[in-house]
Amino acid sequence: MGTLKTDTITGLGNVQEVTFVSNKMTGTASGSITLPGEGGTVTTNLQQGLAKHWIHFDGTAGTPAAADSFNHASITDNGTGSYSSNVTNNMANANFAGFGFCNNQNWGNGDQSTSLLQFESKNDAGNSMEDTNRISMAMIGDLA
Image 1 (spheres, rainbow, N blue to C red):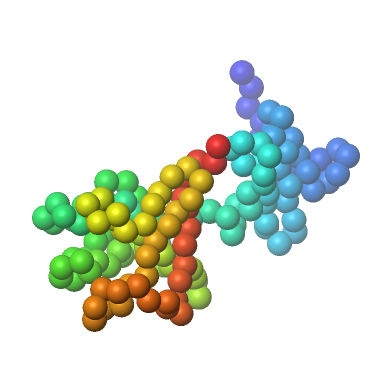
Image 2: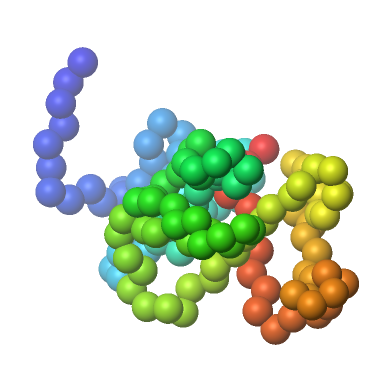
């Protein structure tokens, strides 16, 4: 086994493309890097395509604690059904897509499978379905 130490790696055919173990990575002068996704058929932009913060927790378990998370500092329990997830490293500005998904399996609100994420938007007053002007959704995990 050897060690490679260098300041710059440049592709031979295309100076912006370098192949590591059959995986081509493409970079730009602005720092944008793309590489093949898990399935090899799509590409991922490392700067814009990765989650900056996420958390999975059980809101019925007394004091909520993260079962799994990334860039997560703590959970604030604001009262029944209301939580705030506090981040370790802040976002650059407030113009990010925030999302949340919860499902009480007894109610069947929304569905989740390998090919879709569904949720229902309800109003506060009567718990009836309602369109809303602030909707963000994301799926975070491994691609097939």
